[in-house]
Image 1 (tube, rainbow, N blue to C red):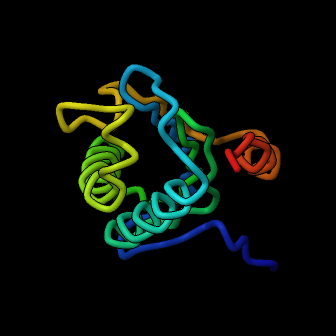
Image 2 (cartoon, one colour):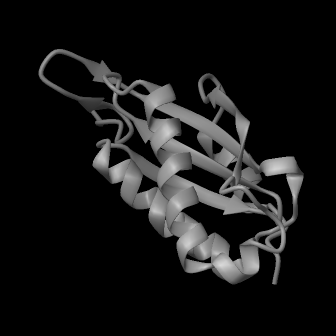
Length: 138
């Protein structure tokens, strides 16, 4: 029998959990460049690894980012989101303070709200294509 590579298992659970996350900048300010999005992806990939998750797809535009993550059933998505937004905000504002300070102030990078949709039922390839199709700034 062929094993589905997306199905993971732990000691007491078997899962195939994916989520589509969207984070927008505070006030939808168009603050991101390609370089900032590249750094953001690396930061978010590391945070996902710290949570035993995997960042399957990442892309964004000048005012928001899309993430497609594979996560264990034991992870609380709200805690993952809090870490993704908090760590990325702190590190991106440190590294790109000159650029980001023109668009954002008071130490806020992300809007408090976010979108989280579980990706079930439909083919993940369709969702991955959508994330990849974002118009990334040059």
